[in-house]
Length: 390
Image (cartoon, rainbow, N blue to C red; front, side):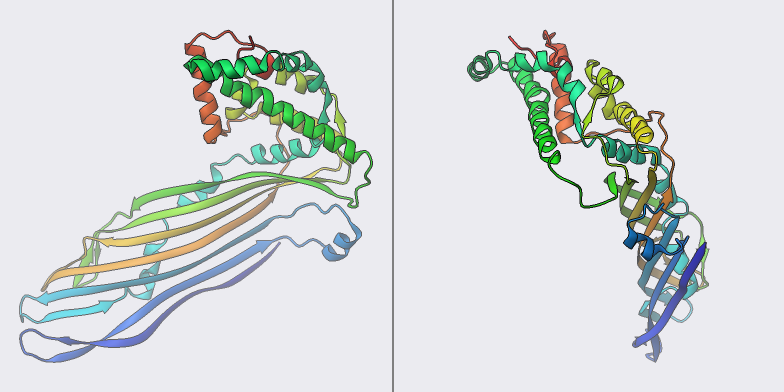
């Protein structure tokens, strides 16, 4: 294990000064403006012996632990305070002292909590499933041939009937037929074409790999509690507004070429279960079944799970006022931006877990399914019983 830390650096640099006029006696004083900036970078990882030579030889190199954290922070502010006793007014830009920069970092535990909420097996299993399932699923195609043939029966009649009637039932059935009848058929044709091409090709690489992941946006607003007294002024809290983007990725690699044609009764049985694909939107059953067979087929499989969180926290001082002999207002703002990157070797788990996977089209599909159910439509089989084929 090697760790490299590039300093916890705070810089407080005088960049000029304001001439502050005292309201009572008319005197002046120089008040320096400061730029407070902080930066930090730390990298931890495990080195792979002879990595570059092994990569040149085409070796399958197991992933190692890697972690990197870095951030930058700046603060700014101003005060407008008046002395009760003398009547002197103090107006100037100011920046919180260097030691207070930690107060403007993201709330404790927030970032790690965002990272830890995702189940690594979902993404690693998805990558293994993609690797194994590169070929043509012949058994499922054969099992659905009868329902595929029904798609062509009076297809023009259904199309023009839908245009003529404009009924909700026909529109719903037409949408589902397009999405779960014709679209899978086009995909099957593409897979067959790719299969025929692959039979005449020899791969020019020795490692086969796949990735599976997604990106999500995150948001949080938190007030740091507590009363803070600095002699001439106080503040109640910092309000932290954090926006972030997290990338999640499972990776699987093997030197064993994936099968070009698969005949998997268990996967096919699941595909033929009515509405199994809807269950897969919320629980990754189908993906885990493919991953289970992929783990058995690719005996040299290596897998890992990676996350990258990029975030910006904007903080604002709340309740900044003069105290004791001073009254007036104090303001302070801060911007704290950074990233956390992790990679961890992970062994795939083949227990289905919750994984909500809905995009705009799937939401439309779900609404169409609910509408069809409410209309008590008579379903056919192709597409897992979603639409009517008259």
